[in-house]
Picture 1 (cartoon, rainbow, N blue to C red):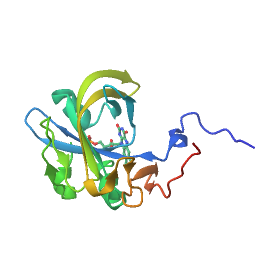
Picture 2: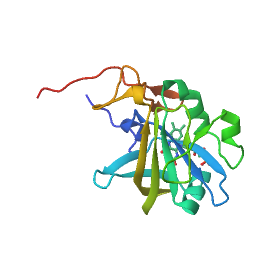
Picture 3: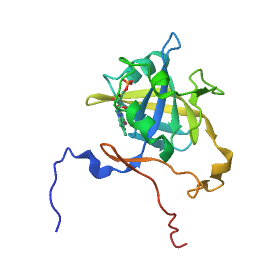
Length: 182
Ligand SMILES: Cc1cc2nc3c(=O)[nH]c(=O)nc-3n(C[C@H](O)[C@H](O)[C@H](O)COP(=O)(O)O)c2cc1C
């Protein structure tokens, strides 16, 4: 038997990967926030979307410089991710609070985060207003991965403990690789 739940219960589409978005304003101040509403939307060119709440500092920074990095955390970063997603850069310097260090990007000015599984350099090409958020559509200009964790098939799931958000303080990580029949 199915049961009906609230049509606004978006958690039905979770768990889904969670990322740390680093953004920069025109004076080069940096901010970081957690985001799980991130998705690839085109292969060639490689375009992604990220849905960002209009009230966030990240929204203001991305609107100013039209670029950001998507950083891929692992299970060991769970507390950083939760804190980055429950505090605002309007109130606290999250880089100081969370002891975050940056790595230079190769194409854009906004840096990546040191110690993550990898990061993507993105520049905004379009945006769509959706409810209380903006869907930023961005082109991926460069991708960096920890070489020992990435194979020609993608992440080595035995080593790269990719973090997924479930609900509230709950997170999970992929537990096994399942191969479909040819
Ligand atoms: C696991 C997790 C995932 C989140 N995903 C998103 C998201 O996809 N989009 C969004 O706008 N906010 C998301 N948030 C909330 C923002 O991270 C939160 O509003 C943050 O405080 C914004 O920070 P800022 O004001 O410093 O930019 C998420 C929070 C958590 C904890």
